[in-house]
Image 1: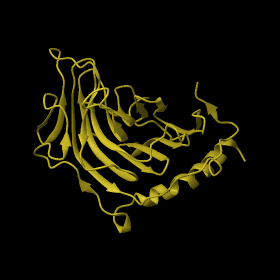
Image 2: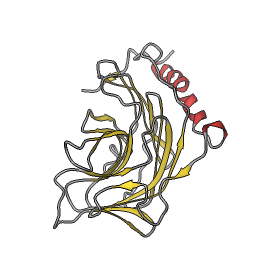
Image 3: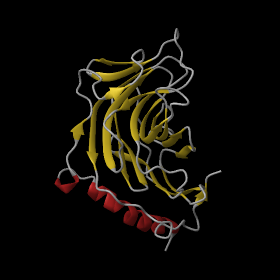
Length: 253
């Protein structure tokens, strides 16, 4: 069997259960709105940075008050484990943003600072929709990659998600994240951008906070709307034995 056939068989078996769980309706529950379209009820962040404009959550920075670190609008609905989250986002300015999930608050760094898994919202195609770990392991999987992180924290590229979908950050773009156990999937306008299995017990997160980012650097404006969440059943934790690293996998430098 060719290497690409092995990868196809391996990942079909690993991710098919997730696709089934993410279907609407049934015992997995229904999507619910996390934003009422009028105000920031249910969210907490710096009021100088966050507001509601044109029916969208809006984070905005200026040249007069540049940020010294990234800040976040933090959802107050509790800690999330397994779920599917989707929302529409657009960005103005020469900067980037992100959607934090299964993250943790870092009050020792700043009042509205979090660290953890992030769906990166980035002008570079190879970064847009990738998996980044804020204040942690950095880039985990770039756009288009299937990655397994082994128990020692080494990242292995074990396949591709297929052609890289493009998006203009100034246009409304739908981002989706589906997490079940230690399997993490990001989508951009319905097309998968990364698939990751995280076996590094000391570093991974199986639950945590949801938050939205405004990034330090050049002035920017980011808007979020149609924010919907569906909780998925507990479980889904994969073992290293059940997801071995293929012999021809590429180690990330």
